[in-house]
Every structure is written in C-alpha cells, then in structure tokens.
Picture 1 (cartoon, rainbow, N blue to C red):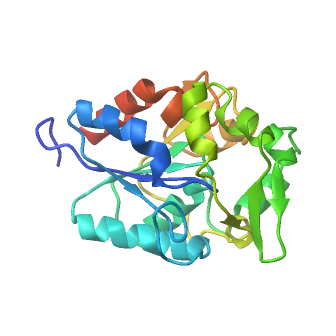
Picture 2: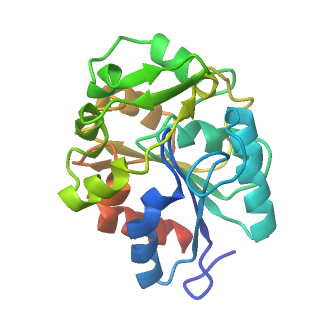
Length: 236
C-alpha cells in the first residue's frame, strides 16, 4: 500500500536507439514532485558496458533492477521499451505498467507481428532506419529528428541525436511470453511519426486507462510536465 508520504518508485525504460539519458528532464520533474525514479540503461545502450542483447535479455536486466529496488514499482516503457516492460512483468512482480507511445503487446506478439497484423501506416520513421550486416540498425539523420522529436526544443534535439546508438534488429522480432494482468495505462501521442496514433489507439484499448497528449513520439521531452504529473499520480 502506498500513500503520499511513501510513493512507489518509477522505473523508466527507454526505447530503441536511446539510453537512460533521454529521461533526464522527466527525472528532474519527478524529483520536484518528490517521486523517486530510476532510469535503466538497457544492455549496450547509454552508459552500459554490457554487450547489446535481445528483447528477452533486456527484460531480464530490467527485472533484476526491479528486484534490487525491493519495493512495488510503476514500470514505464517508451516505444520499444513497451515490449521490454511487458516481458519484465512476466518475470518480476510490478504494480503498474505505463506505455509512453509504446508497444503494449499481448502473449505471443512481437513488435514486427503487431505491425504486420494491421494496415501499413505511413510514418516518418519508416524512411530513417538503416540495417547493417552485423544485425543492428541505426537511424538516418537529420530525417530521424522529425520522426522522434518533432515538438522538442532545438537544444533538446541537438543533445539527443549525438547520443543515438545501434539497436539489434532481433529485438523487434521477439515475442513476449504473457499478457500482463496488472493495471496498465497507455499514453497516446497524436503527432507521433514513429508509431502511428491509430496503432497506439489499438494498443490503448488493451489497457485500463488511456491518456492522450497532443505531442510527438518523445513526450518525456516535449510534454515533460504532463508526463510527470501522470506518473506522480500513479506513484501515489
């Protein structure tokens, strides 16, 4: 049981090509609200010295972080991070899942199979991904800016694009093991150019609550205060 004096920690899981660095402004906003938060670098990303892995390995890494915290947490995933937190919930108990413009998958689904199950939507990210012979992908700049950071301040964009790194292609093809049974909140971003808003609405219907933000694919940077308010309310 939580109360205003003892909020649940927020655990933040980044999306593809990113690292924990992307949540710096959001963590600052949560600090100002008295909410403890942890931003996880998935293996091979950000400051992690581990090798790049796959989706299941990423989820095990997050599950280990949650276990070390030792308290009920609100687990938040952005974009690809939605698949990771879904799989994490099958490995380690959590109190609540929050999908920030993220893939809210069900048992047996992968990001690739979800995308293939419905209409093909035209979004900017489709034209920005380069696949490499080593099984990784990178983003083409400056085209990726509109896909990811269309509503973000120029200084935020400049800092972010310098940190983007490689993403293993296998992470998009691996299915989650179970449909979560814990409460789920979906944050739909209506100007998203990475995951089409109509796709997000499909996944939002799988969740208990939908919150709609008129912003781009990176609400932690473009709508920081609104996201922090939402997470603070869930933490308490």
